[in-house]
Image (cartoon, rainbow, N blue to C red):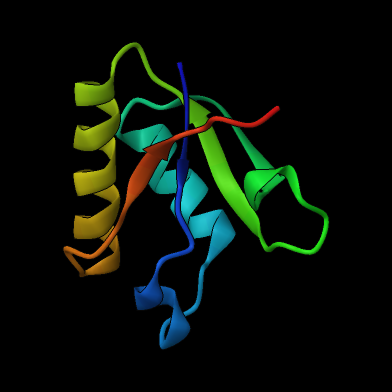
Length: 82
């Protein structure tokens, strides 16, 4: 299953540090970590996408990314675009 670290409101006041987020996702067990435009739209920011075996594992990865960034406001969602 594919997931992504959503560009949430927290990133309005903090940088969406793609390299750091990608590194944290890998360290937490995310596979096939890539960048993609959010929702597949060219006018949206690039977000970190990754594979995980289940939604619960993706949520755990999101919590690990949040700890690494020092915030509980990280949202991981299922990637529902191509």
